[in-house]
Length: 224
Ligand SMILES: *Cc1c(COP(=O)(O)O)cnc(C)c1O
Image 1 (cartoon, rainbow, N blue to C red):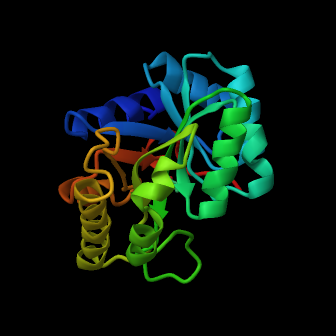
Image 2: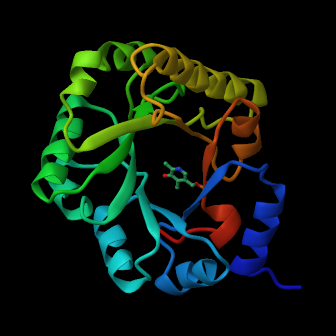
Image 3: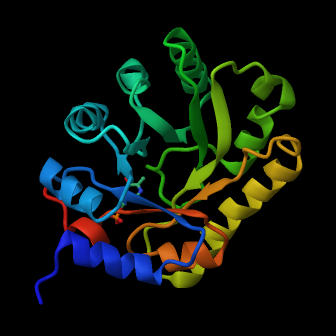
């Protein structure tokens, strides 16, 4: 049997435990591939480029929940804010303020995840656990008007060593737990731990992910 987006999505859904939100990462794939996933019931899609997200949002049904998962440049905030439900990749106070101002301006409320940097690679974006914990004071989150911080996102080191990957996911989850018992203790909306991709999501789920971002397993290899 040839594999299709539908069959791969069905297979994946059967292997994901209940209660875990699947973000179908559709970056670089054509609208037709997303349409097939949509027809198979998928409603949450993740994109990593602002222009591509906007273009796809305009060409697909309006009940799709669009997540922005890539590095967000400040000059792209205005373009995506009308379309996204969740931004996974906020890693500075400046970016958070910009999103807040823009959402306020168009009278929208936007949820964001704060991106953690725990992986060994130098190139990855995100705040270290210490930086994040110091930034997210009650005063600071109380000053946001149109943005709700609903959790954290992170990536494990890009290695084969499963112990290393597991340790990275454990650190992300641990940082979430510190925040949810501290600054966010009276904020039940702070509930999302977004971690795990095609090759490592089972390890992420074992460490307490409740949102996973899977592209290749559903749509096949990307052409850059
Ligand atoms: C591309 C991407 C993914 C999905 O990666 P796959 O290996 O194709 O599952 C997940 N998260 C982020 C941040 C990405 O950029």
